[in-house]
Length: 527
Image 1: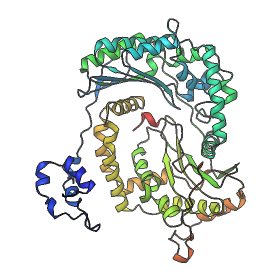
Image 2: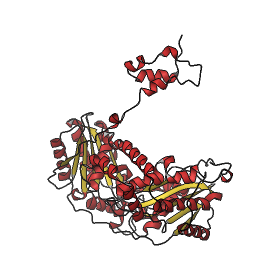
Image 3: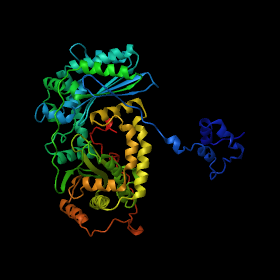
Image 4: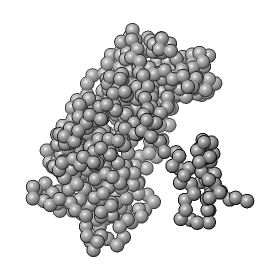
């Protein structure tokens, strides 16, 4: 009896019959491991460039008579409707309720479906469950997001929509519910103290933003949330969760006319209110700011960065490409090559931009052994200096752009993803055609565009640096950083074989997190 290789069996299932006919199964020798019998079948799965062409969905700009921006994408594949209400009511608005009252938006999101004047929390949950609907609320730094997913059948849609409006207009934010959140937050605060990467993240934002609304954690602090009252949560809801501070995103099995009617019903049945006022501009620094957090760990955790730019900046797309090249594209990135591949200082080094209503952050982060700390920081900083000063590598640029284009369809690979993009486009006042325009905009970006953008927005001479470990020689570190800024510093080069440590990669302890530092931003609702 012929014994087939498991991969061949899998391939034969998924390949077309005509393809299988071209492969002579009798010539396959499973006894020779050097002969990969699956190659002919795998070759048949090659995708040509034409097959990689994905069309972004058409976005309708609905003319909502309440002047609430409403975007809609029709999706006939599934009998589902996704609704996202995005309010300009994130954690940045907390202190507009009371000074020092951090965590108001986050607590409002957690408690908004915990009861209204007519319904208990259980009755609300049962109402959604009976029609198969999913309801959620989440606060970010800029946004307060309400999501509803329900079947498009009016018998399912109407009850779910009615309950969503009941919640938005009549939540009571009971004291007993607040006490439960306080109890859970105490556990969360303890977890932060036990996580060097999370401690580093909190201190990084505080160091960068000072007294600005972005400075404090979205969840607030134990002290601040203990002061929050039902009256203040109700005030937050009445002031910010209103029609004129909202944009609406709808995706699903509806016509444009039905979507318009739905958006007007939502806007018309909400408190009208006023648009939130613009946020203050944060103040940037003019030199290095090195801070140390004592933590007993086998690894040292490092983050360095500075204020970035806004979501509205015309350089944003060029900076996204630059970030992919610097530290956002795995082993092909500059930071990974310098810190891991050449020197074995870390498992992974990453960079990121966050783009917000006012300047967000630029940062790079990694963890390393204690004895490699100063050397690794100097190498990471020198890599940033060189990235700003030296010409952009044209080959790396083309590879990066191609990768971003291939990945872009993931942004509209499902109804939920599409709706998230609509919410972001509406919130940041981008054109309704943005999803279609993106590939063309990306294609037009040149090496000179990127060079101009990074020289304008990246500042290796004024970084805020947070180090979490047992000890740090700040003076020695500052000397090394200033040395990197001197014009006669030689370019980075790979160490010789003799210089490479015998153990290049040291497996981290279980508690070490080698993924990029997870900043509480508006990522879930951004492109």
